[in-house]
Amino acid sequence: MRFLDVGYKNFVNTSRIVSIASFDSAPMKRLSQDAKEAGTAIDVTCGHKCRSVLITDSRHVILSALEPSALAAKEDGSDGGSIDS
Picture 1 (tube, rainbow, N blue to C red):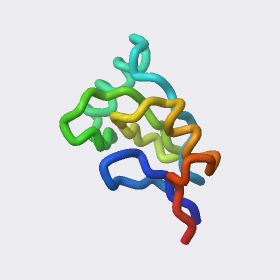
Picture 2: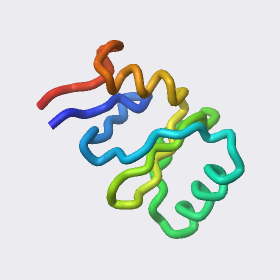
Picture 3: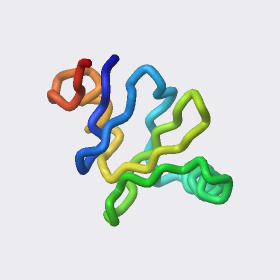
C-alpha cells in the first residue's frame, strides 16, 4: 500500500485516487461545494487556499493546498512524497 503526502502531514492511499484536478475551474468548485453539503468532502488545507481536488473511488472529495502538478510529481515518486507500507 502506498500513501501520497497531500500536504501538512496528511496522506491518502494512492490506490483509491481516481483523479487530481485544479480547484480553479467552476465545475471543481461546484463539486467541492456539493461534497461539503453531502458530508463527503475532506479538507486537508489546514486553513490555506485550496489549489487541488482529489477524487477517490469512494466518491470522497479531498481538498489540498498543494498544486496538482506537485501532487502528481509526488505520486510518480520523483519528489519522495509517497510512503510504502
